[in-house]
Length: 284
Image (cartoon, rainbow, N blue to C red):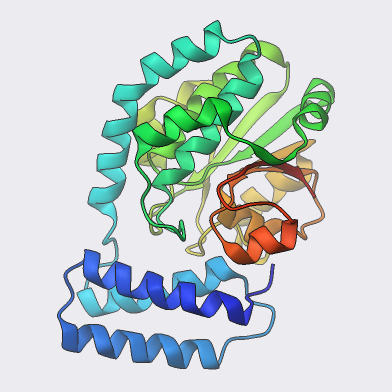
């Protein structure tokens, strides 16, 4: 997905929010905004919104002298979600359709994604909303058929905290389908993206084969991933990509991808003819 001019106000708002969150002084904040405006003026035409956002956060990290300003946010999200997991697991097992229920809760976990345009939603409110959330597009039946036929599934994780809900979905996938599951996470910190450490903390490691993406680009940019990740994607029968940023970076990829996310962006809402906050299970 290319970055539209309509994305610019959101990028500026993200800049201001991140600067405020990191308690950057006003004079330094102004300099960062000017630098971001200059960056936006010179953007390549084919750059995706996650790549633009990453450039913006690099500028903020440089101003802070801190390569990982989201370390505490990722840690707090993991601790919070692990307290919630036992109760959500019971709800999934008691539901009439464990796969759909697990998908809904996995999408609900997107509230921990630092790139969400609407800001940080309350996880408890989102978990109450998840069972009755409307789907803008629902290709779950297609996903189910593909999973029955698949030998290898690659699961692209999104954010820390959210990855605990991914674990619950993976538990259901292992119960229902015979496919090997490979999960791709970050080797090193990139914004709020889930890392190897986050995967270990939430206990997903014994359930999947973990592969580290060494790229420092947000989401998954095909041209920038390591050869190991690229090979996993090419060998996959099904790719499950979590989070809106993965849709933004991979919606034109030549892969059998199913995107699981909540719409938090008016540009994507218009593009997909779906409402803000609707849940999506989308095969492109």
